[in-house]
Image 1: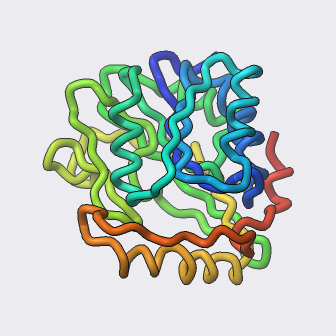
Image 2: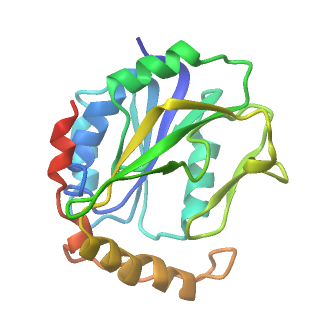
Length: 232
């Protein structure tokens, strides 16, 4: 079974290899469970786009967007929303995972008349205990008639019109579903903050007008997390 009328929407960049096994494993793991998969490549230089184009031979529901310049997480997520043609959007990152059991649980609780669904978020680390928390924003939400929009370039948040998602009581939480997020080591997390997020905070204004120089070399925050092998 799959989520009908739903597009899996994902931003990617230099993800031939990452902490969750890379973009191929990500697409292979999720494509069978949704109507459409829309991957937005934001200037990869490691062959990610070649991998994606090859994956289209295996997954007829895969669509690809590509551009050379990254303009900020909210801007890119909002472009994804605009390009999605289905009534519902499942927005995950390529270092995250929902298993077949998770999709079964979503389908069991899914009601198309609802607004959005939020899940728990389990962050796996290679050198410390997992962290279980509530998700940053609803990962599964309705597009039609609601004007979903992301704001903020780092640790962005979801709004429906002018309403911040946490102020909307109609959002449904399914507590038994956990998004698995593979974050690597403490060193990798700190490196990601120093190389990507902190410079982005400094270089971007709210509207993302300035261009950020992202690191192109392989770094510790792209190292594979063996805990990914605990899941299908």
